[in-house]
Image (cartoon, rainbow, N blue to C red; front, top):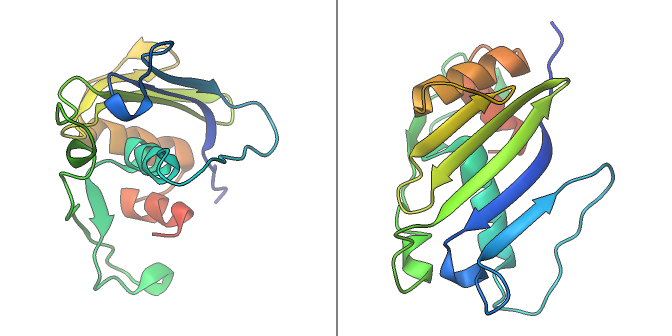
Length: 160
């Protein structure tokens, strides 16, 4: 069986105070081929940005600490233990903050937009066409496109 790895194509963050200033209301970055580097002094939000990317792709779940990895026959997901992570970093508790990620699996493109306050899927597109905006449908699509039988095995692509 061929596994299709996700390729990040675009990331945008809006309404999140950490990334707003007098010239911009957020971040928009298309990812072309090659290596991309995030640099800056301490306290600018580099780690928060990486967490936004991670949570945009995977949602509000983590692998169970009891999971034994690739050799396990039962991969279990548990609720993310730090659900206030993004809310705690900004004054308005990320009330209107959204993250949108576009990823491709070969020619197939999925766009997911999530609330940073709750990590709930706000919109979900496949080839630009709307899908049910739920975590369950997102996970089904990712499994189908990556050719992985379980979403938890997709999470292992990221080392978690």
